[in-house]
Image (cartoon, rainbow, N blue to C red; front, top):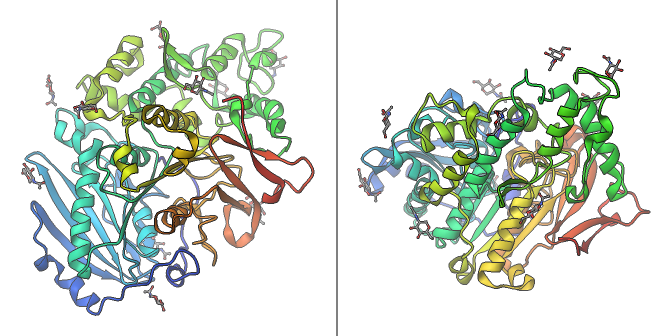
Length: 556
Ligand SMILES: *[C@@H]1O[C@H](CO)[C@@H](O)[C@H](O)[C@H]1NC(C)=O
Ligand SMILES: *[C@@H]1O[C@H](CO)[C@@H](O)[C@H](O)[C@H]1NC(C)=O
Ligand SMILES: *[C@@H]1O[C@H](CO)[C@@H](O)[C@H](O)[C@H]1NC(C)=O
Ligand SMILES: *[C@@H]1O[C@H](CO)[C@@H](O)[C@H](O)[C@H]1NC(C)=O
Ligand SMILES: *[C@@H]1O[C@H](CO)[C@@H](O)[C@H](O)[C@H]1NC(C)=O
Ligand SMILES: *[C@@H]1O[C@H](CO)[C@@H](O)[C@H](O)[C@H]1NC(C)=O
Ligand SMILES: *[C@@H]1O[C@H](CO)[C@@H](O)[C@H](O)[C@H]1NC(C)=O
Ligand SMILES: *[C@@H]1O[C@H](CO)[C@@H](O)[C@H](O)[C@H]1NC(C)=O
Ligand SMILES: *[C@@H]1O[C@H](CO)[C@@H](O)[C@H](O)[C@H]1NC(C)=O
Ligand SMILES: *[C@@H]1O[C@H](CO)[C@@H](O)[C@H](O)[C@H]1NC(C)=O
């Protein structure tokens, strides 16, 4: 996950009454000695390598300030402070994982506990606890953990340099350790073990969730992942490759942000917005948009820096960006998603004329262990080397998830169709890989693994469409009374699937006016599960879910 310049999610109101809401509720388990147990928990725990740094009661309404690495502060995921919506016992621990690595973790135990356990993950290079997710889970009645691996530096990859144990924590050991320890703390605290265990996360966190499904199938009963960054090496390569296409801002091939925003994006919308028969700024299915920028080439010699046209060299850049990335005959990564080119992550990270930091750090600190590496000169040999290296199997692309399936685990994935950072095709590729590996038909897959293609959602949050599906705290500023409705809340849909056996066929997304709940709903739309396509009926009000249906697609 990467920060986006939206207002800090300030008002997280009144979740507390919702824990006992109408839907998918578990009886709340009251703890007679909640307060005293919270203050004395350190003396009751005996967990190898773990040290309790703090245990404190945080009452509903407290404006809690987090002391954390300044580089971790991110308005949505790790804000500097949050108003806590429900009483929790907050326990901060460190756990040594090797003689040169360890994790910091927080376990937030709600007073109103549903018996459920949850782990959250880390974004980007992952050195931060995502307090927004921990707050979200605990406010909904889950005993919730957040884990970060040791070392300073926020999202920087520097701490991986010459320390494969820190890298190992990042790839899989950190989250797994946090889960094992977190479940232990939960059991000691409440005096009984959790009933069901869940995971939520998007992006790098999504990859971490899939890692658990693949290698630690006992950790979770329900895993909800967004825009999972598996095929990690391929994606890291693709960011380097995008730089190779655009060049630096002074190159003739470079396309300035204003030109993407003012010339190219409007042209893409002109050609692709109405493929779904609705002109609403949402390209419902970008797979249908085969964009050709040739029509924008200046008739006379322009500078490629004005509001009406682009040079032939820039058009070539645009074409290459929107083409799949191959090295020789080897498919590396899907094309960049048309419609996502003017989103903030695209313009500030990928198309800005420098190598995206996530990729630059990976090559410097892991692939070449050389902080002075000139990442602008990387090419095919380096990209192939990176994929080959795949430390600790960070690619997270094992198709055999039968152990998870056999124990009744449910995997619910979603992916924004306007995602600039990770192509929505990636979620489909992994789904098909699992289906091929296990030799399962679609209906067999439906029994434990579903992928929702969310039109009008960017990377994990925000977007022009009905992007709010309850994927996290940032997904809603002021939750309404139906916030826990599993029809609309993808986390609660996961819970319902695990606990009641009712699988979601669609997820009803909401777009609030100015993304503010209190201003009312701008549009709502049901998002379809792969391989169906959301299809407008051509006559009804397109902002209403009834006017759309999920149709089978023959052109996958
Ligand atoms: C716990 O739930 C009860 C009702 O089940 C509710 O009255 C109370 O406000 C909740 N407390 C907190 C701290 O959320
Ligand atoms: C919480 O405290 C921080 C700093 O202490 C402050 O900046 C923030 O505005 C406060 N939030 C609210 C909602 O009062
Ligand atoms: C405890 O830490 C040591 C190194 O300090 C490590 O070798 C061992 O695996 C750790 N044990 C657990 C249970 O994490
Ligand atoms: C990292 O290890 C490499 C050799 O593997 C060595 O050349 C380099 O000096 C080390 N860097 C640091 C900062 O320790
Ligand atoms: C892209 O790669 C090619 C071949 O490796 C190289 O010649 C070219 O200079 C690179 N472009 C940029 C902008 O670095
Ligand atoms: C943009 O370039 C076109 C083609 O070269 C030219 O006709 C037009 O005057 C330029 N517009 C501006 C604002 O520079
Ligand atoms: C485009 O124009 C802007 C100002 O209008 C300038 O800052 C920028 O450097 C120019 N870019 C190119 C590639 O000429
Ligand atoms: C999606 O991935 C497949 C490979 O599985 C590839 O052939 C196809 O071109 C990709 N689609 C897009 C839109 O990039
Ligand atoms: C990576 O996965 C493969 C196949 O599952 C396994 O054989 C190998 O040991 C794993 N490597 C590491 C470093 O975990
Ligand atoms: C939504 O935001 C826009 C731009 O900031 C503003 O002009 C408009 O009044 C807002 N709409 C409402 C209903 O507040």
